[in-house]
Image 1 (cartoon, helix red, strand yellow):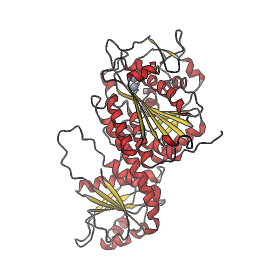
Image 2 (cartoon, helix red, strand yellow; image 1 turned 120 degrees about the horizontal axis):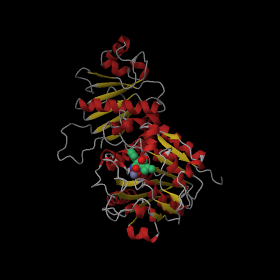
Image 3 (spheres, rainbow, N blue to C red; image 1 turned 90 degrees about the vertical axis):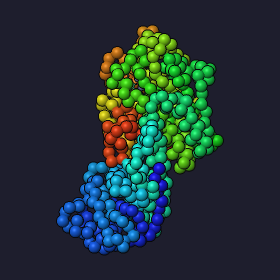
Image 4 (cartoon, helix red, strand yellow; image 1 turned 45 degrees about the vertical axis):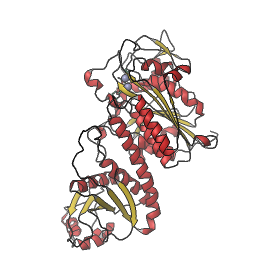
Length: 502
Ligand code: BES
Ligand code: ZN
Ligand code: ZN
């Protein structure tokens, strides 16, 4: 991965293959965005572009300019940050991604970035995210590496009086970008590689690197605590299930706020006996995107040493078909003793989450957030633009909305209501796992999950629309997985403050 460092100092002396200059929309002169000295070296080219109206600084506009050979920098990549409805940090993220790709395409190995708009801390974070995520590729399954030259090092150049802010911003940006890259890697991996045991290995590796506490339950241990819902899904699993629990600051749980993050880890969803169509199965290697988001976030919060007790819980299983598979009309018992009549074996995610949400209670959480590729219904409603969020607590919902805007992994509120619960009333058991009426599927699924939540502050994020490329932008690949959720959860954990005694 590209290495990013910071430097305070003069731009003219910056030795680099490509000097990226972030330019605001509508600027009249290079001076106005701190590039006057560079423009002097370029013989006034930037000024001429601006005057001619060839470069307006609109979002993602790029111009590559060449200084005389005597200059310290070989090229200038001028990139527009635009204006309008999109928040500044997001425009900077996209501009950094566009400039990074442009510089890499012309063979640059080293880039320098300047012209960070205020507030410097947030825009430095955004530059790091945009550069790293824009240059992300998934090639570990190719037998030969692509022969493209890659940017190896970027240096962010800023003035000495804001270097402390830039440093703080860079630290967060690197952690966020690494978290998303991890989530992308895991979700892009095929289901014969990324099995429940593989997810557990990754959790153990992160724990080792970052000093997290980790526990991995196997089938026998899940049986001992009667996780009948998860185990029903795992009955036909060829690769056995795992229940993964990671903790950051476990030893300080008494003194710190406790946040629990739960991620759906279905490493492949065939639908089971309620079999998906062949087209419907494509993409289902990504049905562990919630788990990937939680693993990414756990890595980031430990890297950033966030002053909270954070627990990551990942129930992981395949959803396959064989003679041992669970059936429609089976009645199973979850770990809180509630019974569930199976209507669809394809509504398996909520079964995994049920036992995980029950397990979360033992940590006496101040807030619990689960994230899952749970329903086609959420994807139909919101596409790849927003995830659906459901919450029992308005403050928690707002905190997720705020964090989502900040990192631009947005969530939109959807309703929970007793009327939706009626759709899963069962004649034989306490509830059914799905409705027979294809309406409000995301809300109905949430009412099911609520049966396993025994604490006041809980939110559920349905990312069935956002886990793939459909929200593609300059730093979200047009093909493959988005890595959505890792930055959302990390930012949420950073921002959240518990209202003690409420
Ligand atoms: N993993 C799917 C949901 C999904 C669908 C995620 C498409 C991403 C893209 C989930 O397990 C599922 O199959 N849900 C069913 C529930 C239904 C049977 C009540 C659905 O949404 O159709
Ligand atoms: Zn399913
Ligand atoms: Zn699923």
